[in-house]
Image (cartoon, rainbow, N blue to C red):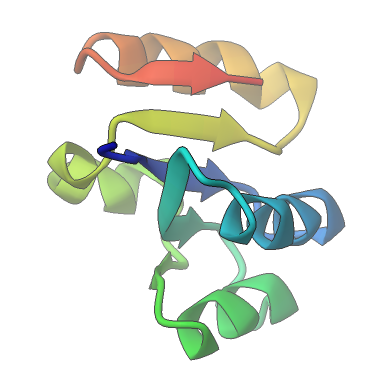
Length: 96
C-alpha cells in the first residue's frame, strides 16, 4: 500500500504531537513540518527525525508543495482559511 505523503503546518505543541502520531501511521508518511519560527523546538525535532523543516511559513513551502498529498493544519483558526485556499488550489487535501 502506498502511503499518503503529508506535511504539518504548525510546529508548536499540537503540530509536534501530531508528528509523533503520524510516525505510527500505516497509511500516512510525514515529509515536512512547516512553521514560522526558526528557533521552534518542533522544527528542530522534525529536522532531527529526517523531515524537511520550513521556517518560512507556508509561503516558503509552496515551492515544494508537490512533495505531499495531504496537509494537517495545526495553526490558528484564522490562518486555516488562507492555508486551505492556497493548498486546495494546488489540489492538496487539507485537514484542520
